[in-house]
Amino acid sequence: MNKILSAEFIAPDIKRFVIEAPLIARKRKPGQFVIVRVRENGERIPLTIVDGSPETGFITLMVQGIGKTTKTMNQLKSGDFVQDVVGPLGKPTHIEKFGFVVCVCGGVGTAEVLPIAKALKEAGNRVITIIGARTKELVVAEFEMRTVCDEVIVTTDDGTYGKKGFVTEALSAILNTDRKPDFVLAVGPLPMMKAIAEMTRPYKIHTEVSLNSIMIDGTGMCGGCRANIGGKTQFVCVDGPEFDAHLVDFDQIAQRQKQFVAQERISLDRFVHENHTCKLDSYINQQEKS
Image 1 (cartoon, rainbow, N blue to C red):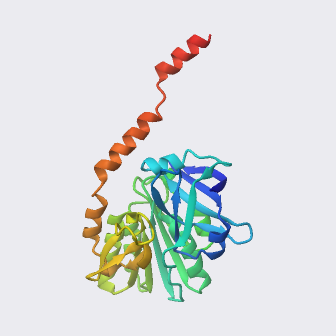
Image 2 (cartoon, rainbow, N blue to C red):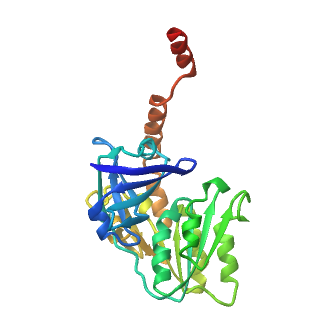
Image 3 (tube, one colour):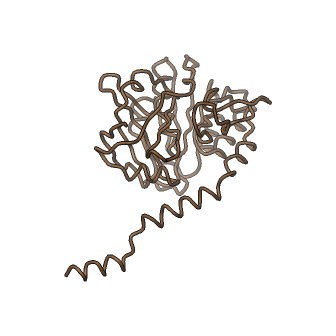
C-alpha cells in the first residue's frame, strides 16, 4: 500500500496528491504514467506522473473526479492509503532540442504537459504553452507552468480568464506568424487533439499527442488500448502513450471510448446514490438525538 502524504483540491473535482512511491520517484521520466488501484477490488486507472523526488521518494498526481474510481480516490485525505501504485509505465517522451516548441493542453492534460515542458526547456528549446479550460476555476498548474516555459497563454471557453476562446485559436495565431513551431505537443480531450493535428498537418510540423485516456491495465495484456497508428495496430500503454498525431486514427479511438459509456454511467449513478446523504434523514437523526 502507498501512503498519501498530502491531498488538496486545486479546482472543482480536481485534486493533487503527493504519494509515497520511492522506486517510482527514482525511475520516472517525463511522459510516463502509473496505474493506481484505490481499493483491493477496484479497477485500475492510469494517471500521469506530474512530478517526483528521488530524494524524498514521493510522486505527484492530479486526479479529476469524473467516474466512480476517480471520485472515490478524490475522497481520500492526507494519511490515507491507496491499495497499490505500479510504474513508471509507458515510453518516456522523446526530448531533444527542436528549436521552437508549442505545447497545447486542455483540462487536466496540463498535468501531463508540465514535466514535458520543463524537460523541453532544459534541453534548450523555446517553449510556449497554451492552457485551455472551460472557465477560470478549472485552470490548473498555471503558476508551475510559467516557471518552466518562456510564455504561457491561457484560454477559457467563457472568457472568465485569459483569452476568450479555444486553444485552437491561440495556436492558429502562432501558426500565422513568420516563425512556425518546430514541434507541437497536444494533450487533452480527443476532439481537441484531433483538431490540433489537422491544424499542423498542412505545415508539416511534427506533432505528437497523448492517448493515455484509453488505457486500462497499462501492461499490454488486455488489448483494450489498441489504436490504429499509420495503418498499424499499436498498444497505447506499451508503445506510447505518445504518438505522431498525423498518423493517429482518431475516429477509431473515439468509437472505442464510447464502448462502455452505459456501464460507466450505471457505476457512477450507483456510487453517487450510495454516497448521498438525505437531508430528511439527517434532520430526523438530529431530532431523535435532541
